[in-house]
Image (cartoon, rainbow, N blue to C red; front, side, top):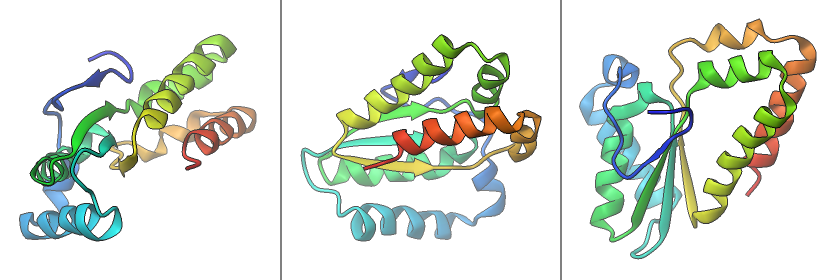
Length: 144
C-alpha cells in the first residue's frame, strides 16, 4: 500500500499487539471502544486510523462495528514514512500528506485511533523545528 493509502479492508502486516496482548484482552479492549467509549450505532461512518502493528485490534474493532451496522473505513498510517517526509522538509508534500489525513477524519462520524509503533524512536531523527511542525499538523488533525 502507498503512504496513507485508504483501503476498504485492512491488509495484514506485522502485529505487535498480538505479541503483547492476550486475545481475550484484545476482545475486551475492542468491545470497550465500540460499545462503551464510542457507542457505535447503525449507519454511523467510522474511520479506523491505525498503525500496521495494531492489526489484530483493528480486525476486532472492525468486526464489532460491522455487527452494529456501522460503515467502516480505514486509514493505514505509515509512521516511518511520515517522519521521512518531515525530514525532507518539502512544505507542499508535508501539507498534502497531513491534509489527506484530516479530510479522511472529517468524513467520519467517529474515529478510532489504534497506535502501535514498531519504531517509536524514529521521531528522534527529527530536528526541533521538524518536531514542532509534526506536532502542529497532528494537533490540527486530531481536533474533534
